[in-house]
Image (cartoon, rainbow, N blue to C red; front, top):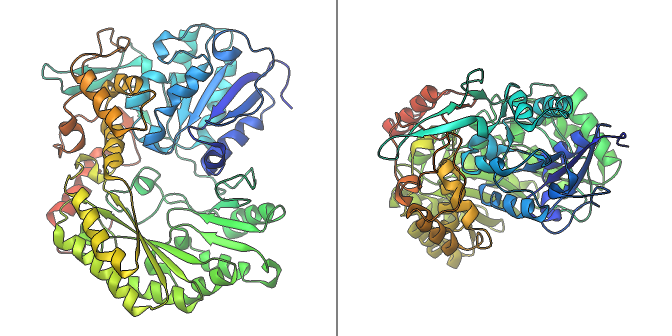
Length: 548
């Protein structure tokens, strides 16, 4: 029960309740805030929310804090709709003493918050287990001080980025030269914070209204040791962390199974937990009869007959593996340590264990990819179908999108990916293999959001009401590029310059010495190391890459 005088907070998710409540990250942040007696937190989704705080008066509904958890770039513009709904000024520089502190976190904002930076007062870079307690404590301590002083105090906390206290500096040709503090005494760079505790996260809410109904989710691993060169989930969340079986995983599973019989084991590569085989053996016990167990994407090389048998026994119908490409050459380029025979073995073990389906994930438009590589992906799927008759196959395929803090952050979106997605459809769908392609057009917008600097903020503001239309994005970008934009001055006091050409942001390959929008934000690995990994990938296409 919140104490008298508790901070009034709203924690928002930029989608519907069923989607938002299925986000383990959102659940954990909400539970962390709700566990504090000095915080009265309410949830808000695009279709519903908790009852509002009592005696809401004035702008910002009398709130002290408004938070947003963001895990997908295309959800970012929804922030503005939610702010408007609560009467909170959109731009941080337009907020006054009685407006809430607007903060955000999640992988998208940790990777590159700059396109949305002018809308946030504070961005929490990294793991909430470390950042949230320090953030709330600082807000509490500064409740009676002027807003500007509160923001300066937040900026001194490791991992908390206050965008209004940093200004981008541009050259005569519009190139980004630096992002710098606007006054002395501020950190020149802000480092992502990493939780290294023995326990990871698990569900705090189990509901039949979730996108995965009545499921208890347990985070088995965080990050991934494979370091595929495009992968944000691996590079941004380093190091690879695993809770112990007896002190971490089993207690988390037991807690959820007291309320439901559906268990989801989550992580970028759950089967690489060093005790995963022991966890499977434990779940194979008679006491779990009737429990349905599912796992997120697993590394194909770790699929075993035991995994297929136990998952089938515990109600799973299919297994999900990421192959990225059917071309062994291209898998070496992206550092996907996976042999073709291991993919066939995974399919065979899945079928022999009693599973009826195999879901594979791949990409089109990866750096150095050519038409032969796409043909190799189609050939591989058809060969698997022939080798494992009766196993239902599906291929989810997306266009490569460059992500900050990965070795391929300098690579652009390749326009030929659109035709290659169609080529896969022509090859596979007539043969009874389900193809689930992501929209090429929306991948382009995703790249725009993942790769831009603050000059995209006026575009995001202008696209309100049409951000679900590809044409709306292109029209808003053209308007901003022509100087027709409505935005306050950026932190240096000057006018916000227009964004660079669309082609340059989305499709161009950038030089490694280019100043990146996130230059002032430190990820787990320095840019020099990422550049070495990129050089290995692009220069050595025919030999196995040196392990990271």
